[in-house]
Length: 272
Length: 265
Image (cartoon, rainbow over all chains, first blue to last red):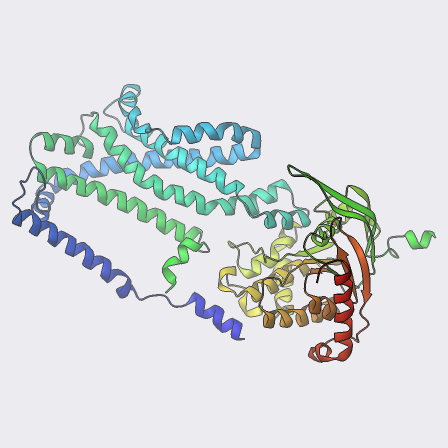
């Protein structure tokens, strides 16, 4: 039973939360402190870089504006993400049934994926009512769609040949192969794409707002405040934007932990 | 004659005049040429030979993962293809190839799931199989939490879960250290004597082949063919004492000399 003990030992060894999070927190606080000091010591002007304390003050002061603006932008990002991710998964599943179709499609998908889709934002503003959530959500959906689709196709295909031989030896049907091997195999790829997608979706939502829109959302707010030389306010809004990105990312990481607890990337933090 | 060809009397494996050539960009490769081999029911046979002698190819032909270029393969009196569809084969490879997203118990259940067995039945059978390989406490673990030897035992449990009549093993212990390997060999023999399954076992280890088998099939490369067959009439059941007996060494020497004859050792 030495083997057993070794095996259990391997799954143990989880670091305590304090040892895991304290260094990161110290670096964060140290960074803020350095920033604050650097701005004061070198007398950096506010329009170049406001101090963290100024930004914090602006954040508190303008909370009733930046919070709803952030929520609007985040809804746009979430709606676009949901549409893009769902479409990416569905298209990958459908085309994987016909290898020829996905072979023909992949080069285009990869090409489109490497173009800055965000450049479509002004066009989307013409396609949909500019005050609605749709121009932004559409850009987000497009930005999220391609990495999700491409990675899922990859995950459905890059299966250990040993798995295929085993399933063949059981006389498995193509449907068994899809449901019991290919789809589970693709999940780590899909979640990788989702994680990239959350970051992209907030970027796309805000950038699309830079091109206009009358309602108060983060993109409009940031560009207006910057134009008015209210840089602390602009930075406060940027703070909200990065907070939105982090929240979306954490949601995906949490879902990932629940859905694929077996995957190596989920265990990395357990190892000493 | 009719009685001999009836399925009930047919040998577990009958390979006759089988050749296999692979066409690749680098040209034609004759992997196997004119191979004849019969394996009796419940027999334990090893295939041994240098790399490139086609021993894995022969195993995959028997298991119908490949089709022969010429010749015929009958398994329990049926074609290899029919035998595969009838789930006559349990397979174990050098890599345990456990599905990392399934717990140990669910890995063992997988073939039963594909075969459409009821959940309760599946679970009970899988638990029995884990008992057999002495891993009953690990059903809830994921594969990554197990050592290499334990993973390979799960793979064996999985291969046996649907009681296949033939177990095909392709260097199953090749990636294990020597100590674990010897323990696994003893385990396989114990399971073999309990289940009465026919075993075809590919290895490149002489002591492993001699310790496990009733017969050792020595193969030679380019093109792959059977050079000789060594009968290993060591007493059953075999144990650690078998490994230390003079007869064991004689048999190892016999296999080694047969291999030397084919330009291997």
